[in-house]
Amino acid sequence: MSGTPRPLRGMFGGTFDPVHNAHLRVALDIVEAGALEQLHLVPCHVPPHRGDPEVTAAQRLAMLELAARGEPRFRLDDRELRRDGPSYSVDTLRTLREDYPGDHLCLLLGSDSFVSLPRWDRWQELAVHAHIVVMRRPDHPLELPPPLTDWLQGRETADWAALRGEPAGRVLFQDVTPMAVSATDIRARLADGRSGRYLLPDAVWDYIRDNNLYGAGGYAG
Ligand SMILES: Nc1ncnc2c1ncn2[C@@H]1O[C@H](COP(=O)(O)OP(=O)(O)OP(=O)(O)O)[C@@H](O)[C@H]1O
Ligand SMILES: O=C(O)c1ccc[n+]([C@@H]2O[C@H](COP(=O)([O-])O)[C@@H](O)[C@H]2O)c1
Image (cartoon, rainbow, N blue to C red):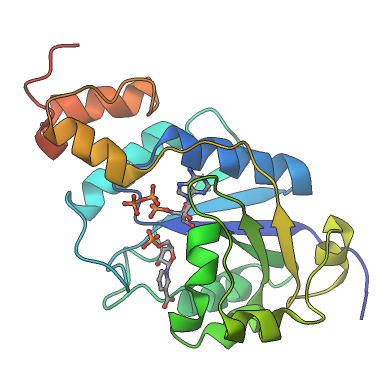
């Protein structure tokens, strides 16, 4: 049911190992498409479904801080780093709801994350706390597993106003700037002695080199 429009606050979680230009560009695309008041960039502490990150949480946070500078609608949010155990998104959304009771929330997911949703902890509860915004990734086509197809019935909307008018539970698919950039590819390039420049903000690339992360310390460029 539609009610009084509320401010819309986004959560963009990731391992960010490291944060790269595609994360930033698609995040800004969503902020612009939905006129979001604020988007929380939330590095996870213990990724629930993958191995440990290659660099420390403090280093991932530092890179995200450098990357987010200059965009006032991005808000660096270290709440998962202050929590022990696997970084389940449902727990994070619950705390965001407690902190911002007057706002509606939306959880941003790339298409690869969205198709994996039925394997997430308490996944159906996510939509109790927030709307879900799916960003189409060119390198990850949307092949929906059956539980997700069923669950989507009646939830899908193309109208951002619905996300302001309803507290949670809608799913919106948003086209974003297609950028086939991934952290996996960047880590592989750096391990191979190649440059990360122009795939990451300059300040992040400098930080990686200066701190000899991902094997990039010897790189002169
Ligand atoms: N190029 C991209 N376009 C759209 N969404 C993206 C892109 N890269 C990452 N994302 C989304 O950003 C979120 C955080 O992703 P993550 O930190 O795992 O980055 P990644 O580049 O996919 O990393 P990795 O290659 O290590 O898995 C996820 O929801 C993911 O789908
Ligand atoms: O809550 C879960 O069960 C869950 C399972 C897998 C991933 N996530 C979250 O999804 C985000 C992207 O994860 P990743 O592994 O693609 O970087 C990050 O914020 C993770 O904490 C969350």
